[in-house]
Image (cartoon, rainbow, N blue to C red; front, side, top):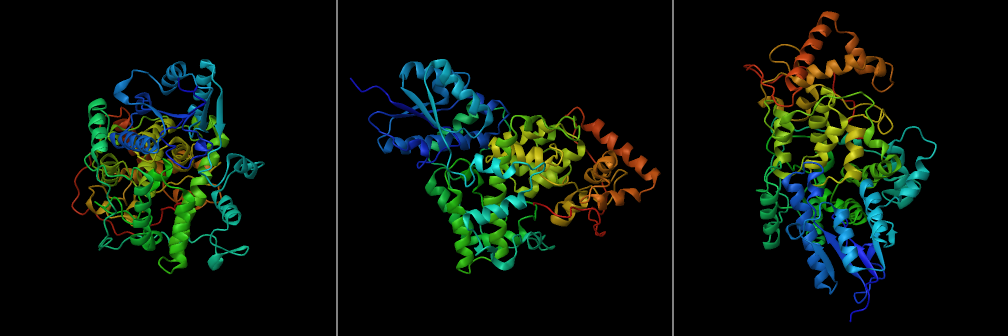
Length: 541
């Protein structure tokens, strides 16, 4: 008779780290691993096919790697059981396996951090939780940093992280004499575009992944997105290869053009490693060290490396800290009183607005868009339109392969939608169509004119931008970081503002049912060269 099961180690889909603290002291003779694929995790939001496939394919590859090491893995495949939820599946197997205790890392999602221990309690099995050391700032450390602050600013947190971890430091001072090279990292391509771009490393599906792709098509046929281009890294070796490919071929120019957008170019100089980081296939310490080493070797300039390190060491850790500090109240934030429905074209990409067509189209095709496409195209339009923040959050969580709630929710509700009223960012990131015109070539292929706010050729972004300023004048016109934008509003004659209000109301009426795409009148010269005077002062903090 085999010995009784001591620990059943629960591994969730975003905890695929073979060096996880959950495996410390693991005894293959007395312990086992539990993993489960559950349809509810793909349907609580209308998850895209690429996102579902990435999680399932990576989980199965992790399972197989554990079994190859002689570890027993109790794995519930999607088509092999009928448990309605992850919690129900765990309860069923606790009754069958009878472990002395369940051992797990702290779940990365607030909902599961409550529901999984509760499932163990109902089964009468102790839940033992270990801290997730994947991150460079513990929840307790972040809470101490945040204590007594009414507002939380990433820049101040980032500087502390640089000091704590000795990253890009020269004694007590930052290397290069500056903490932040963001001013050097905002360039747009000229009319020639990005030129030759080395294609990112691809990871074509093996037999196991092809089985997952077929399963997703069969089980979730009505879900958005396509699997035709699926080629994400699915294990630590592939994640490391993707990192090395980025460091060698795109990091040197990443900083300069990290905010730029271009038609038909989904990757540009970005890394494609965020999903691997968030599934724990790649350690952030390794990512930071590789970037810093490239700078030390003279293979990448300091502004590019600092901008990249800021995203990993600063922004990523910052949003995680805020998530745990403010949940579950964070999910209910709606400081701007936004209640409009999300337009239906967010799920199809079927709109004549070229920037949205490009950003949403590549999102559905690849499960990916870079941070400016998310913040200043899809997120900006939803904010200007006044979409309910929860609906925006659900869309982002559903469609992006790197979306796990701890990183997605603060980025959407706090940064993109300003739903938290300024706790996370000092101002709303709003701009007219002129910002998109400056940072991309989208407007050159669009029947709308970003310089116009009214009339049949008016850009909906520009119409809604001025309407946003008008609607929120009392809140922001004296704000020190937004006063300039509202001064521009004050110069507009009342008759022009009235026309903008009517145009914005007409747009909302047409999009209010979430079914009708906006169709503009054709115009002969879609490209405006007028000077920009109402764009963002900055982009990412």
